[in-house]
Length: 162
Image 1: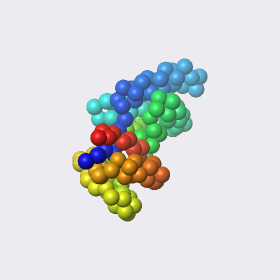
Image 2: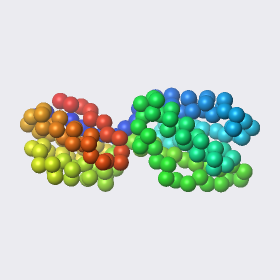
Image 3: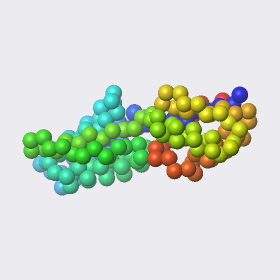
Image 4: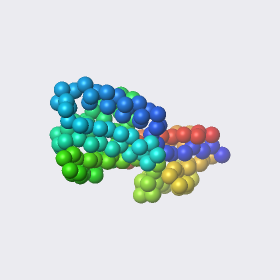
């Protein structure tokens, strides 16, 4: 039976390249001179740690990160900017989480969308991905089109089409 997996992941090498470009750009900007700004990517936990002196600089770093990530092919919805910056002495620290994998709520929402569409497919949640199987490849392609048009808050990739 034909099947494919719905995942939400970010390539770590592409993310590393985007963060390195941000670091170089911030180092060359006039408004960041003498500001003790540091940006660091934790590949293991998929976190970006930012340390700088004020809120305006954090916002500028976030804007540059989004702009450079989009140019590298990373969807801007992959980042979780909801956590506020915390003061630590004379600097502000902010941790940006990079979303890797589908959360349970999002997986349930995707399965519900698929079931409500009345297509002849089966959707099953498997850890941090959703597997969709059907008798016809055309039904699988209809599911892909349905999910691309739907309003899911995370970027989706469709892999392992068999």
